[in-house]
Image (cartoon, rainbow, N blue to C red):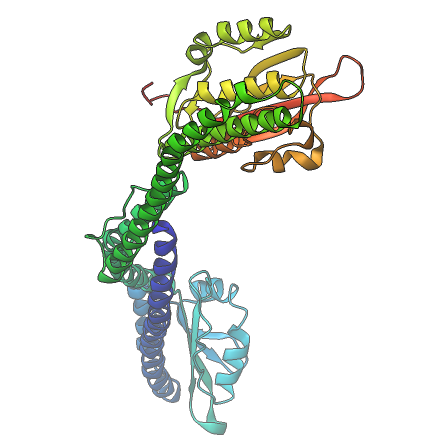
Length: 473
C-alpha cells in the first residue's frame, strides 16, 4: 500500500511539473531562435544598405572585404545575389556549399528578389539540423537589383537550447525529489497503523482474540479507528469468554445432578424383575444417562479446546512416536491392521490442543464407526515455500455418502447408521475448528477400497501449513 500511494503521488507531481515545464521550455527555445533570427536580420539589413550604395557607385571592393571578414569571423556564409541568382559578392565557395544542403533556399531567395523580406519559421526541434536562411532585398519594390543572403548553422543555438532545457529539467527534478523524500516517510507514518491493523486482523482471523491494534500512532483518524477496533475486539473477546465459561460451568453444574440421577436409577436394578417392561425401560434410562454424561464431557472438552488459539511448530515424527504403538495395540485388539507411511523430517504448524489429540480422534472414529479391517495413516508434503502438509487417516470401512461429508463436520451431527454407537457428534467438529485456527483445513474424502469391492471407505485429511524454518519447536 505504501508503494501504491507513492505510485499515485509521484506521477501526479510529474504531470504537474511537465505541465509547467513544457510550455516554459518551448518559450525558451522560441526566444533563442528569435534572438538568432533578429541578429541575422540586422546583419543582412546592414549588408543590403551597403550593397545598394556599392552597386550604385560601382565601388564593391570594400563590401567584398566586409562579407569575407564576416564569414571568417562568424563562420556564416553571406553573399550578394543578383536577380538571376548568381553570386556577385561574398565567399562564393562557402555559400554554394551551404546552399546545396538547404531545400528552402530557392524559395526564400526568390521572395527576396521580389522585394519581400524573409519571415522566420518557428517549426523547430532539437533533432532538426536545417540551417537558418535569412534574405534581404537590395533596393525597394520594382527597383530591387539583388538580395543579401546568410545561411546560419544553428548547431550552437541548439546546444544552448538543450543546455537550458537540461537546467530546467534539473530544476524540475528538485521538487520531485523533495516530494518523494517527504512523501516516503509521511506515507509510511500514515500507513504504519494501517499495516499494524491489518496484521492484527490477520492474527484475529487465525483465532487469537487477544490481539489489539496500536491506537497511539498515526493520524488522529486512524488512531480513532484503532480505538474503535479495540473496543469491538474487547466486546467480542468478552462474549466468547462468557460463552465458553457458560458451557463449561453449565456442564460442570449438571455433572453432579446427572451422576446422582444415574446412581438413583441404577439403585433400582435389584427391584426389577428379570423379564418385563420395567427392565427394558431401566436399560434405556441407563443408556440415555451414559450418553448425557458423554455429551457433558464433550462440551467441557470443547470449551477447554476453544480457549487454546495458538498454533506452534512441531515435528510430525515426534507426534507419531508417542502414539503409533498405542494405535497398533487398539487395532490389534479390534482385529484390524494399521499401516503408517510418513516420510521423515516433516515439520508443520500444530493446531491448538495438539496434533496428537486430533489424530487420536480420527483413529478412534475409524475404529469405532467404520467397521473397517484396515486403517492407513499417510503424510505428504504438498508444496514448498510456503507449502502445506497433508496427514490422512484412511480406512476401508462403510464410509459415508458424499452428501453427508459436509454435514459430518458440523456439531452434534450423527449418521443414521451410527445412532446406536457411542458418541456425541462433536469430535470431528472440534477437530475441524482447531485445524482451522492453525490456518489449515479438515476434509473428508474417499478412503481405501472395501474388501468386498462394494465401494470405498472414508479418509479424514488434515491439511496444515509448513512451519517456518526459523520457528522454534
